[in-house]
Image (cartoon, rainbow, N blue to C red; front, top):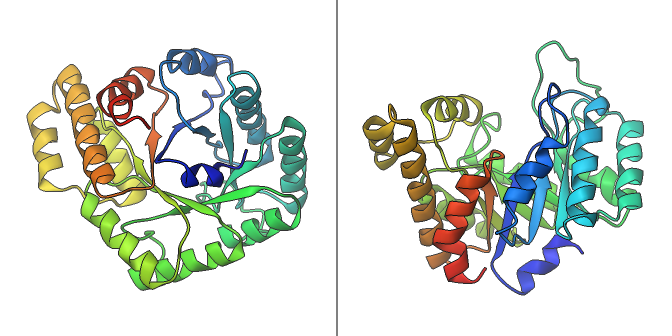
Amino acid sequence: MKTVDLFRQKTVLSLEVFPPKRTAPVGTIYETLDELKGITPDFISVTYGAGGSENSGATLEIASSIKNRYGIESVAHIPCLNLTREDVLLILERLKKEGIENILALRGDLVPGIEPAGEFQYAADLIRFIRAHGDFNVIGACYPEGHQESGSLVKDIHYLREKVDAGVSQLITQLFFDNEYFYRFRERMELAGIRVPVEAGIMPVVNKKQIERMVSLCSVHLPSKFTSMMERYGDNSEAMRDAGIAYAVDQIVDLTAHGVEGIHLYTMNRPYIANKIYEAVFRLMAF
């Protein structure tokens, strides 16, 4: 099933997981998925490790198991910066074989010490290539606060329009901690004539190191309510975990009250946190 069709029926709930580190067996991800069995997401996306095509194996294996073992629609991430056209064709063939119809098409980040393959410069290049080589549902990433490399919010929405014109049928946002950025982003989408479903990406923050890394990578704004929470609970791991869950729940309640089309929960492979949020919000709201 193509996940874009879900938005015609309901507010969509999706989760994101990532393959285990190379030092851990891939089977450990199934322990995480088994612990998520109390949740009924509409789909689960699987991230892709840094580097080239040798990292695709775990992503494809997990995406296939989610679809064929757990009976949940899966989305495979494909970051193109370090892939050749031949690499992508091999991935697409594997996805077709496993019955996976959904792809999150990304440019990906520059990796120190790894030279880009040079065949896909932007996500839009990959999107056009995928659409030319299969009947896939292509999902794109978007940035409520603007991508840090775009230069301005005007340019950022212009690049997003390019991705939609290239063949993206739905969007998932980068994480954010101030819902006002998301609401203003939706207004910019409307003004630009971008009318595809967009899910709000929510990441529960459970420790100081996690948020420091996210701010460094994504340049997200931290509202005073969030920084006050960090100052109050940051030195107590259990209290910080519970406060982070409560903050994410508060965000989601506000987003659903404002008619969000979907919530994409970045689980960080922490089933306890995902289950607590589901119990607090999604079960009551009948996602």
